[in-house]
Length: 169
Image (cartoon, rainbow, N blue to C red):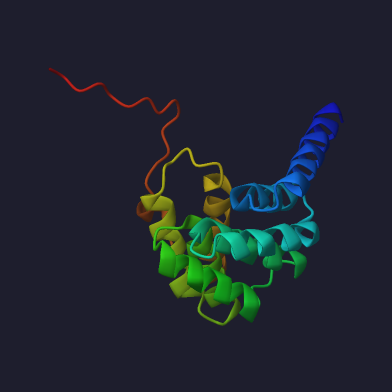
């Protein structure tokens, strides 16, 4: 419970700082992200809208806004959320949240096989230690099982303690 109180106080401090710095686009993006990560996507919409007004060319802000919209709709990718993800992908084709949620949109529109392929591509192209990899791999496993597709040989293995090898001289 102490950790939650600490996080809440950090979010409050950030919100207070932004009242004094209304042109801090990155700060508003961070505030929106903080609300989404703490389970309050509804509170994230206003900070993300402010971030987008200040940083319209930010793929991260567009993807974050889309994620907040999905969060307010119980996981459904709405047309407005899809538009935010499309804009994010247009700005940065590698933006992982936009890639994930655009595939989720496909899955929600009868294209689960195509979505599964996109998620496999995403998991294999991203760092194995990305914080969202376990959730993505669960989504892949669940979707593959539902479709009766064997993906065991299509996912790069995750090795524990991934320390990059030092180049030999």
